[in-house]
Image (cartoon, rainbow, N blue to C red; front, side, top):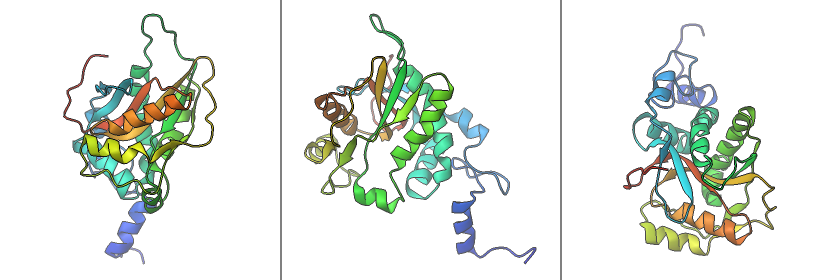
Length: 238
């Protein structure tokens, strides 16, 4: 069928299997995909974000433009091919969070703990998208000289509500009884930094809840890294 265009539904299916456009701007010739150099350059990160109770927090950029479109395409529209490119955007935020402070030493390894999704949401998306992001980020950090591994030690109970539309208090209450550590987490090894990983920070409730549960399980987090900041707070100096 040379020269015949695929029907629209088939074309959409092919875009999921063999994406033909950039996840950020939608541009690109047939066969291209992922994250184009222009969108990568447009990302302003790493940016620090102030989230009391969550340690140091850094993001790849603000939640807008190409980055917002890419996050939504990856999270909600089946663009799993974006995981490696989005993971690459988190390398510098990781470095920003782990910059040594007085009386601290360089970490020798990092454990990436994904903020968990509701079980029903993960099933609908074909798997936990943040865990997939951690698994794509770990080898990039390892190749850069910082051994890293993903460790999904947090889980949400199925009774947790969708957090969309909830304010900070509502999100905190929603997570209070639903977020838990799975089993008995292995304590951090000497020199190993624990980081929470998520896609977007809005109120900071999820990051605070994750940090609290990890601390209660004997696995305190040094901070968190995320793809985008959708909060109203302005970045601060780290």
